[in-house]
Amino acid sequence: MNTPLPPVEWISTPGLVPYEAACAFMAERVDAIAAGTAAELIWLIEHPPLYTAGTSAKTADLLEPGRFPVHATGRGGQYTYHGPGQRVGYVMLDVKRRFGDVRAYVGALEAWIIETLADLGIEAGTVPGRVGVWVARSGNGRDTRDKIAAIGVRLRRWVSSHGFSLNVAPDLAHFSGIVPCGIHDDGVTSLADLGSAAGLADVDKALRAVFERRFGTTRDGDARGLPPLLGAHQLVSG
Image (tube, rainbow, N blue to C red; front, side, top):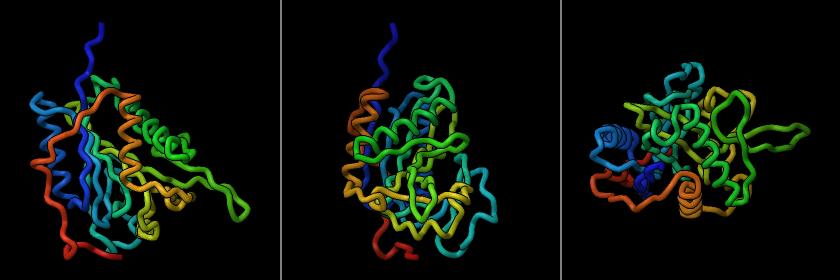
């Protein structure tokens, strides 16, 4: 008989969280989860406008190096954008116990986002050979696939960090400073761009409901000890 997995803590932080502080918090939490002294955690946040470079990032794909801060990160993947109106999900789970291997884990993240979008009235899917979640679109006499969610993960002692970014209503023009995820022939989209009125709170609610259907129970986490938010005077515009 399988032992039920313990509830995953769930925290949604309003406001903008500095990227480096978020990464430092994740690293500490991952070590604590691996040591058995902290519960697994889903942490939903927003960042100020910035670009991140994954372990496979190519210098040529950073088209506007001075536009926003650029952060090197230990997650897999290439360049991505984070900013207001985008739901970033930092997923700190025991991957070996819950999913068995990294490939299954990435597939589970994609399926989680696809089902969440379906609950919000958006049809999305995966593309063979590419990581992330995409929406098929037609216009100007051609069919395209626009990316609505990016995925980049890192594992330490089989505990995951980083996770996904889901475009709810970000400024899509901010993606033009990079080649997102190294993809030259398709674009990016968002719930707002697709005509959805769903906001971050709606997305958070749907994400949690689908997570519990697919992976198990959650409980509200303790927000004490999380990084402080940015003040308005610290924001970068572009």
